[in-house]
Image 1 (cartoon, rainbow, N blue to C red):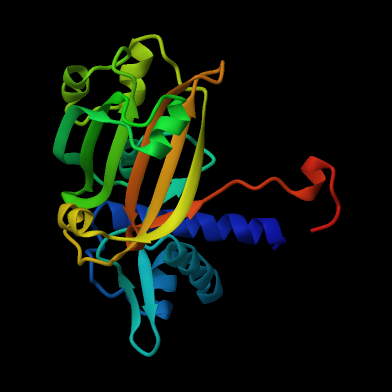
Image 2 (tube, rainbow, N blue to C red):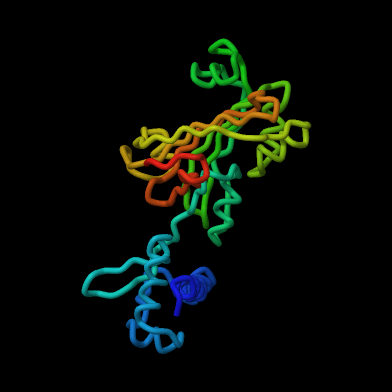
Length: 249
């Protein structure tokens, strides 16, 4: 069997198990059958099965405990592919979980310095602000704050979203997001964020500060998202030296 055929088989086995996991056929916390038994059920070799399990472990769907076996995790890790600019709800739904929104509020607020700089306005300028907690199967996983210009979307229009997409609301106003630039940093939960995400103060977070612009380069949306570090896997598409004409790392 060629290397590409082995890789394809590994992914097919992983997909079979993934479907069972996401369908709830294998419950959270349950132990998988032994490798020989599971390999027999699937009609594959143990080495092929181990390769597939390694893929699911990397996704956060399974965890292997030395000397004990392989177990279904309490919840799958959410995969945030930063090469794609899409909403939190879409990311949660793609993981097979039910997206939701809690603690939602909208108001006019003075722009903090970093947000004002992105919009090229003076600090303290009034902007429309939407604050909400995004949930996956009812569990808080992201605290988000979105700023936009009042003349584009006012607080009442943001309130009317009721968990919907700010991108879609902007598009309805003729403002289409062409690209976004995100800055990622490790942070810890301040008291207010810890309370909203139902975690301990000082819990590890991954924070994204993103500036979204139109095709003309006009800033339309600025977002601050605090993601639970243990709920996400973040991936980025990186161009290789061959694509950019370089040959040295």
